[in-house]
Image 1 (spheres, each protein chain N blue to C red):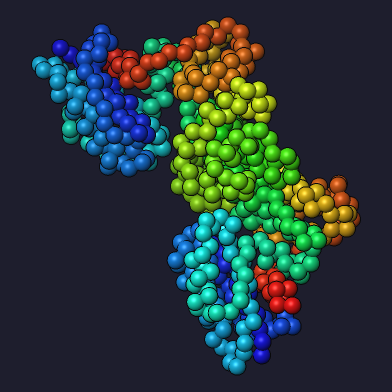
Image 2 (image 1 turned 180 degrees about the horizontal axis):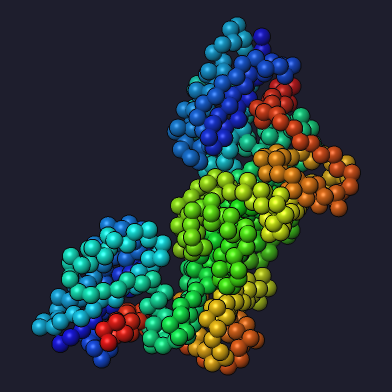
Length: 298
Length: 298
């Protein structure tokens, strides 16, 4: 039985799935993070472990190809370490791409189109006739407009503006301070400069709740998030020179679970491209590895 | 001979100066950083050392008061450590304030007015009839608009937008990439996410150079910086409810050395308050400690 292994290496866990040549799942495994930028040595150990555990139960089978999608891979200065480790451990042909590329292939079933992801960060990736283009994905200091981190920071920055301008405290500011357990807006720095990006993005549900209770500031931030994500997707379409009938897929908790962001995203895209085919689907990114591997083998 | 010690504890060095009761300098010393947020234990050791070295050469003198202005002091969760250490080491009355407060007192000679600082960060601090107000000073993630870090990031973010939108590379982007030693805009992340704030702010001279060579993007960023700094200063004036004849002092390399930022700052303030008295002066912030200490003693 011939099979293919797909690996999705993220910032918290690595998922490996063995697919039969017809795309059927044969075996699955999980290990620790696979982002080489966190700690290269640990990430490589986790990735090798995930692949080994995925292969272990498949008796009399032959692994034809391994496709890996690793978070942060675009920022790796020298990929020789992971490449040597994979060759030494398995001696099976493999390819490594960014995690966005496998997510794109998974949602678009290996076909052309644009994928917009908004979770803690935000990026749009598109393919068309062999070309690949991206917009966003610059990280929290340079961009990530429309991401969960960005949405929460917009609300926190609004607090600082109210304070600077001596304005009355808004309902949103009151709710944020209450969740933070702070009395004064000035205490905000103590939180922001010791928090992780995930700690900050964890305030999104509170902002969504406020928007659902008709808080105008919260509504505006979520609508702006959708606009920025739509702009990224349209930038990618323009760079790829695609026509009207493009498929745009959505992934990530912000774009798939926050109604106001998603509706703003769709509306702003439809202003320019009314015939877009949208996809929102819950599929494992490792399925994208399968589609990519099949292209490499055939 | 009675004297007062002023201490300016910054992120890289601590400066202590002993002033006679008439404001004459008697003794000076320097030590390592005095920002408690970097490492409290080391910062306390540095501060104590600076004060001891400043006192050492003054024979038969009596230190009446110590006033300390420490960078980041507003973010210190529990100031008991530094307070106990000072009491134990010297047993002299003292007061500790943020470094912005002593800079304000130094430039305004202990009188009311507004101080706007723009170096790596940016803040405005004002006093009027016993009230103290601030705008800005939120740090690089929440604000610092008009600071050196902000100016450089504006230029870097402009690079990412050009790339996202598939625009032709601007002259500014070419100059930044050349200084970074990168071929592709996509490599920018490798620099930004491993650089310090000072590393990033170090690109300001290149942007100033480009603006002087009439690069429109650079000019616009510097003019915007002046506008944001002016807005902060005017927000403070509004919160203090000062009249037209307020004094506004400027400090920090961006506001005192970058002509285009300074002229934009002055112009935007004059639009609202044409009679402002501006001060740009090179004085040691420890002189502000002297003015504050004199008020405490008398």
